[in-house]
Image (cartoon, rainbow, N blue to C red; front, side):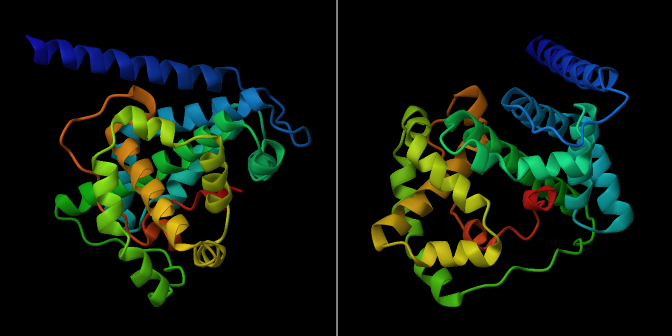
Length: 264
């Protein structure tokens, strides 16, 4: 029946994903690049490879095993997987990470690169948090969390006041409207914000006017909702399902997600 067909389709997809990642390993050069910049095409392939690795069932199994044995959030493990992929693509990991840190500087007006970079960060965060939730749902102990970033109580209270209005606005948007919301200008803003340290993020949001803070909250909600639905990739919305409320994690840094900036 349909269940059998769906299971076979999923098995085929996973086989194709594993074949792609194995092909990267097989093409890995004997000498890794330590000087040349990352070409644009290589950056995009790196983001795609990382997202593919995150979607494999064995990745989830490895993260859950790590949580069980180490009782730690697997953010460092995810970053290790990503740096391994950098080397599979032929770039020594320290050099590759340094080149990734230059992406906003080297491609300031490239909307595709900015969007793919944002998707890469969100996919890693989503995978990490999903593993923690699965671990806890199975009765596992609460893992040790990374040190919390600084919190500004006044800013948190101010931003939370925008949540109801922003939630209603996003709930009434179609998937097409959400996709088009991230134009080049907004993608650049998101890119700048994501590359700031926690203290810099707080200062950035503090400088925004009231309307800009509302748009910022709306932007975070749309990004989280589209990633949860797979909207960035599939372009398909699920009707009558409002996005979850945004929290100050967006401003002050998630407590359970891998800090992609550690790579950079």
